[in-house]
Every structure is written in C-alpha cells, then in structure tokens.
Length: 172
Ligand code: ZN
Image (spheres, rainbow, N blue to C red):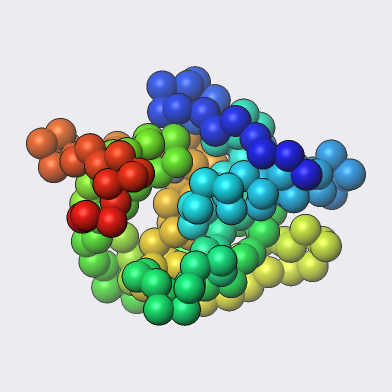
C-alpha cells in the first residue's frame, strides 16, 4: 500500500465528472487500498478517487480508527464503487465541513440528514445502506467529489469560511 498525494482544490481533476468503474481490476483494488491508507494517514473521514488524481467513481468513507468517544463518533470503513446517494425525507441540517483538498478551511454546509447510499463493494457485491447524521454528510460530500463539486461551492459568503490549521483543531 502507499500513501497518495491529495490534490488541492485548484486542480482541474477535482472539477471533472468522474468515470464509472466497469470492471474491478487489480489496479482498482490497489487504488482502493492506497486510498484507505491515505485516508488513515490524514485522519480523514472520506476520500474520493479524484482527490488522488484518478477521475473514477470510487469513494472510501469511515473514521473507524477514532476512539469510541470521539466527536463525531466513529463509523465503519466502506469502499464503494459507482456510489449513488439519494435523500430519504426532506430533513436537512447545517454543520461545519472541511475537506482534505481544502486543507485547514472549514465552513457551514446544509446537507440531508438521512440518505441511502448504493453502489458496489470492492468485491463486486451490491452495496445498499442507509446513513444518518454525520456519515450521511460524509457520503454526500464524497459523492459530490465525483461530480466536480467541492463543499466550498455551497458557501456563497466567503467570510463564513474559517482557517484552522490541523494542529489547532483541538482548540476549536
Ligand atoms: Zn472533500
């Protein structure tokens, strides 16, 4: 496995519509395992293939390495190919969001509270799961990456964005 370079938000690959994955090749399996390692090394909660320079519909979500009493609480690791996220109900909520491609910056984004995430697992099996709250937010954020959307696109007022370098996060 290898830790991959995460592209910054001005990189054009982050603005492409990513391509569906038709076949799970060894290269796709290696990309997925490298993304898992990259996510863990960055202490992130989600990573989309375009963020590591591959314009493919593949996301890795989960913060299972966090302690059980962490805020937000941990949820399991999922690798999903060709993910589709669909809201369940109309409830939406605003919360602070960040992104490994926009390091240090955080801002408020309104997302659906509950979503159904479908797609395929790295083993090629159907994936179909309902997420609520924080994991639902992460799923929406990562699928956005596959459609060329960054969380900052939702923030019309730039004064709502706050810069908080990683080492200062504990003081938030
Ligand atoms: Zn992101």
